[in-house]
Image: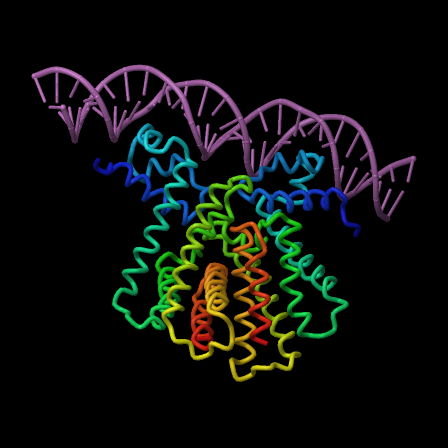
Length: 187
Length: 187
DNA sequence: AATTAAATAGACATATCTATCTGTATTTTG
DNA sequence: CAAAATACAGATAGATATGTCTATTTAATT
């Protein structure tokens, strides 16, 4: 079964708008206009706006990790790989105009009752944390006495998350680069 | 000049709703209904919904620090004071049903062009970071070789921020308590 | 007591929102 | 070529949004 071109256009436009102006501030009409598709086509592929959000988060997660793999695929040294994670995020913040983390943004926007949304977001976060843990396990730590590997992974994850919030709030990458330097000291 | 009771009620209701269901998902009508005031009264005190948002953030910042002072006023030891910051945030997350950080949430919701909103949010963040720095300066560090005081403050700030995001996403305080334990190791 | 200020109720304008529906045209597939 | 799926345009429903306006009542201040 071939992927529909219309479906792709809808999802791409919706993704861009959801991230740039927010889910709640983006109307179906604008998506229809900018994707240049018919109203009925949209509702054919996505029964409701909320379904479009689900598809957006799922696709965004896949792209996030795929592009990260691409970003670090040349880097063999696990320590450098881990540190490149900060560069990846910094680069993305520049590329997307310091809009912050896509997933965190959704969490902040959806209603409390929307448990599925939180589940989708936490899925990406957990996957990232596993990723960090795996990289750390490959590193021969200089300061193993400081804390256990799992705690170190958590520390790095939390700083990365906090730094991305800062990137959004301050509209710069200072915190992300600080977090990178701190991480270097901890390894 | 006495504070208007109506104004207070409006701001309190708006604050609760903005935080609980989001700024964009909260309508003026709901604020009017729940605050039990007249439509014109609202627009008398706040010319627009956006002005209400500004007042909300400003007041939230004052309350945030005032309540923190209250929370730690008995704690004299600067190290314990600093660590109490994590408890404060954890307690708030429980109290407010893991809705995440009030300020970060606003950042995630407002339009890119709303520079004033980002300014208001970053004001609270910067003030918190200063607060952390000041506490650290009072502590006699066990591991001064690890990193400079300013970097340590930044690390703690970022973990705290990241942990609050996690509290929101996962609906628990695990990350905040982890961040506390990590901070203990770093001091 | 008289003046000013603040609060009330509620109709109204205008715009936008999501979603449905009808009917036609195009494209893909058997 | 015929059948089925997909896309099209656009009217429409029904709800909700923010903000304005009129007119009356209550409360505070001089």
